[in-house]
Image (tube, rainbow, N blue to C red; front, side):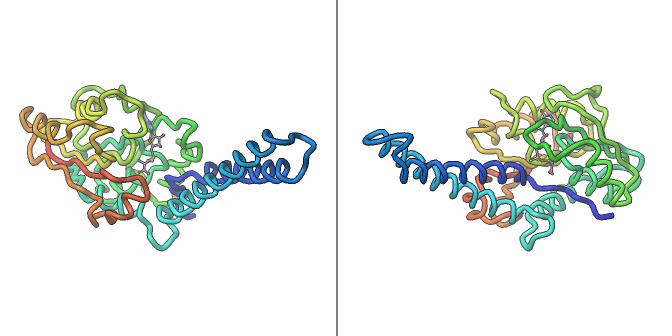
Length: 263
Ligand SMILES: C[S@@+](CC[C@H](N)C(=O)[O-])C[C@H]1O[C@@H](n2cnc3c(N)ncnc32)[C@H](O)[C@@H]1O
């Protein structure tokens, strides 16, 4: 059995957008050719609207397909795999220790960490909402089974209010989750994750840390240092580490970075 980590660009979303594009194209021809539904100025306006929509949606479908291809675990680029492997390398868990992966999706990062730390216990939580409909608890469990990983558990949970006591984990990690969460202060979501990390525990959190999404991350790094955190670093991953600068731009991933350190 092979694991199936799905794709950060959901196939269903590409399909629905393609269906919308085809509908607009049909409506363009209906209004462009026939005089039955509209005539004169109204016909010209509708024809133009549906032509513009068809062109715009075609470009969106093309962009989504290119993203899908770049992220795919089976494709040539395998960007997702590279990112997951890169983050998991920063997670060090003592034997018998515990690690939390927040927003585990299809289980890719949690399973990669579990494989690297066979004597630790990994817990992956996610809210598994409808925006990533192909991800589920059952899929995570199936993927762990396919990878022969047994030191892992998955549960439903919310990154905004983690259902764990302070200082429960020896390591915490997360990948491309918090920028998806509507919030006025995403630094608070980071602090919620770090709340459940033990003193001395390590963290590696990868996301789009652009100013517009997170505010001043340099100040946040300093804030953690002032709180006694050690070796805190914000590492740019869009300068060739996980993706090129050009890829980050066209894929909408500019600002991708990893915050690492020790509590
Ligand atoms: C782009 S996917 C990344 C999945 C996984 N971390 C990976 O690297 O493959 C974003 C994930 O964040 C999850 N998510 C979004 N909001 C969440 C929340 N408030 N609490 C927990 N998970 C959340 C989604 O359900 C989805 O699985």
